[in-house]
Length: 352
Picture (cartoon, rainbow, N blue to C red):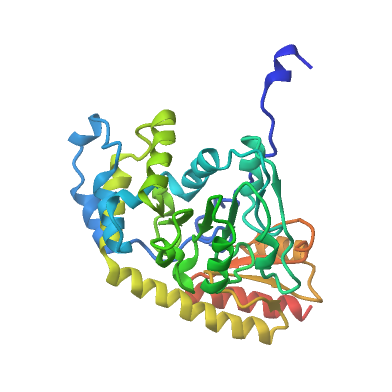
C-alpha cells in the first residue's frame, strides 16, 4: 500500500440500477414514473430564458420552497430542498446523527442507509423485518442515536400504518426520526400530518417517482423550522448553490400542477393492482405493495436466472443479492402496455 492510501476514506458504495443503452428496452428497474412530467413543466422549459443561466441560482430556492410548502400545507420555513432525496437524506445523516450511539434502520431497506452510515462513521443497528417483511415497531423502542425508515419500505413495498409510525416517533422523542416517503404518494397517509405534534420528526419526499422528474434530481424535507434551519446551516457550509435554476423552475411548475399529479398517480395505482392479480395467477408471491413496484418471488423460478432471461428479452428489473431476499426481484410498475409485455414473457418463461 502506498503511504497516502492509508488516509483514504474507504466505503462500499451504493450501486444504482442499470441504465440500459437500448432506448427500446422496457425499463422496470429504477422505480421511475412511466409517464412524462406535467404539461406545465414542458411549458416552463420552453419559456426558460438563457440569460439567468449566467448567474448563480437563488441559494434558498425560494420559488420552489414556496410551491412545495403550499402543496404540503406548511410554512416555507418548514421546507428544505436538495438534489434529489438522496442529497437531502445524506445531509440529514450528517446533521442529526452525531451522538455516537447507533442509529436504527431495518435489515431489509433502502441500501443507501448503511453506505451513508459508513461514510460518516455513524454506528448503526438493523432490527430485522418479520417474516411478512413488516417493520416491528417495538424493535425501535430502545436507546439509539436516531431512527430512519422508508414508508412504504423499499424494496418490499410494505406500508406501515400511520399509527405505528407515530408510535415509533413517540418512543424516540430524544432523537431525530426520519420517515423516508419516496413512495408515499402511491399508498398510505403521510407523516407530514404529525409534524405539529412532534418536533423531532423529519419527513423526506422526492419528485423522482410520482412527479415524473427523476432526471431533475429534486428532493425535499418537511419538518419544524428549527430542524430545517440546522439542515440549511450544514448545506450552506457544504454547497450553497446545490439547486440549479432549471430544477428550481421546472420543479415549481410540477409542484403547482396537482391535477396532473393526481391523474398519473391513479393510473399507476390502477396498473399496480391489475398487475398484482396477474402475477398472483402466475404463482408469484409478494407482499401487498403500496409503492410503484412489486417485490416478487416464485418457487419454480430462480431470481438471478429470471433476471438474466428478462434482460436478454429487453426487460430490465432489479435484483438484490442479499440475505433473506436473494430469490426476489423488484419490478417497477410501468405503463399497461409495458406490464403486458412483461406478463407475456413470464407466461412463456414459466411454461418451459
